[in-house]
Length: 100
Image 1 (cartoon, rainbow, N blue to C red):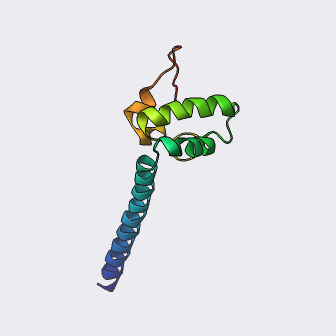
Image 2 (image 1 turned 135 degrees about the vertical axis):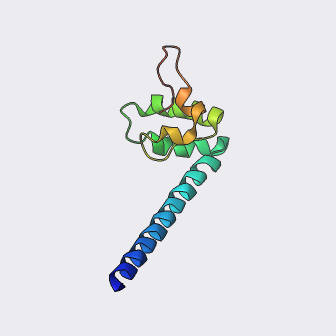
Image 3 (image 1 turned 135 degrees about the horizontal axis):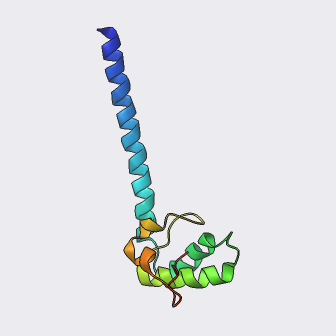
């Protein structure tokens, strides 16, 4: 009986920890989505393109995507789906993805 109680308590603690970590991730994503206005695009794109092989090209494309989609994903690569369809579906004239 005691072992069942301990297992139940352990499961509850695990679930609470998981929910709190999910809340932190959502809070970070909300900050990313709500913070970029036109004046913030430069700094966010500079961070996004900091390790890119062609930082000037990356910054220019990122700036365009930031103004149009009002979003810059966190990190230096990946996470594009956080910004939604606008960011992931924008393409160049050569039909390549535009947003870094």
